[in-house]
Image (cartoon, rainbow, N blue to C red; front, side, top):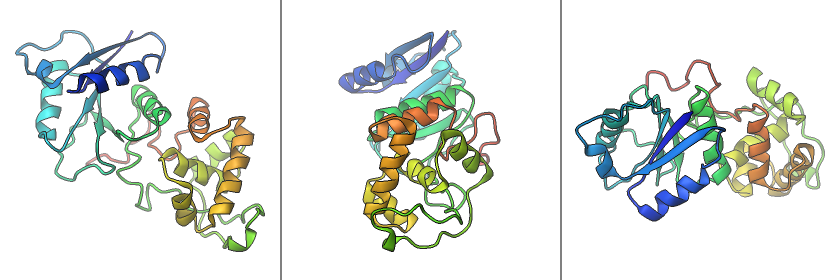
Length: 246
């Protein structure tokens, strides 16, 4: 049985998280706790698979991580934060395998938990603006859309993993790039800016990828892709962590 511990100091938020991830994986036991529960002298003797640890600017994050390790000795810790970016002052031990902002779409949080439980790491928002983490545009031209004049020639090409995932999902490279940015919660205007296309073209690609994935919205598209094995730019399951040595 998979055991997940949700550490959130606010009771209402903790209850919401417990309900949100109740069925994130089969045969799972999910328990809630506040910060005070980690201050006990004895460690939980069970094998805790994942601690979902809520962090806040008002608390010492390094101290909270140490407390979670001492109290539960989990295989993995995922940080849930008020901020989009992971503060540079945080020293991350090997057990910290994920970081997700609290305003992320529910399906994104669920997908991130599945990735971490499967042995991967998930820092999609920590490195999203670096060349290594962002999906490079493809050399292949866009499929003409309603605003094709705004489209510009693409530079570079998708990574091998991204190319394989786009084919697996039945998407063109550009549609896959749009899906990766949608999975990070970006609005359509930001998607267009990152890919150097108009908002109208980004919307056209979005509608087409929805049709190909047989879904009707962003959340369902992310869930459909991840459930089929796509990582959408996150570190490969079972692969070398891109954040090793952090």
